[in-house]
Length: 270
Image (cartoon, rainbow, N blue to C red):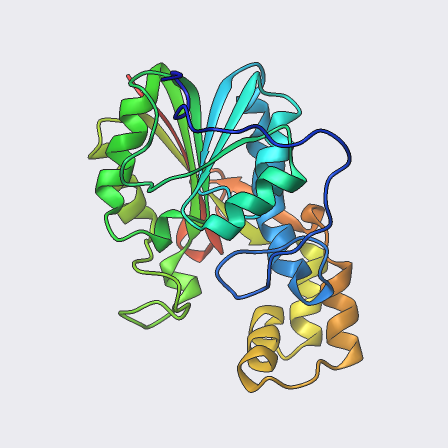
């Protein structure tokens, strides 16, 4: 068996990437859709911020989804392995992103040898998992000494405010900053750094234009299955990754980690 992936792995085909075919279900974000653009850009900014940590390294993306992030990492990494449990998603990534070695796998049992990668990336995934502690332990197992774990997840406090159960039906358990830190530390990781994703000035202007919350305006249309007003659609379609701010916890008195939209953790395997 290869140290990185099972011997059943088949590389993606050569040639230009295929057109996107995944359906928008709410389980994963899809690039190139106007009504999904806000969520895509909110994910994209985290990839852009953390991709330098992958330069020249063997990288695992655990829960690669549509594959755009793994492909971005592939532009700087030595090698990228993408794992996802959904067969249709794996087929899509294999066809569209041939630079990514993609495998269908259960994230509770990573199909990699011990100490076989330098970095594990898992963005907007851990909230979907039933056994989060087991997953983080698996990440520690496959990382080489001094390897880096990078995780992002919605901040429970702002994503599902006032609720014991997640708003998103695809989420099993959401975390706040303290819970995320405890989860990662419990698997033996050290040097844990937390950051938060926040709306920048242009998005705060959009919030004001749409009743105080651009997010709530979008969710209301989706829940009601109602047509989008042109002003809302135009604003959502215009969002860029640069409209979000990523601020490390404790860096200033304005951005408190508990007020963030998404949490980002970077940790080191001793």
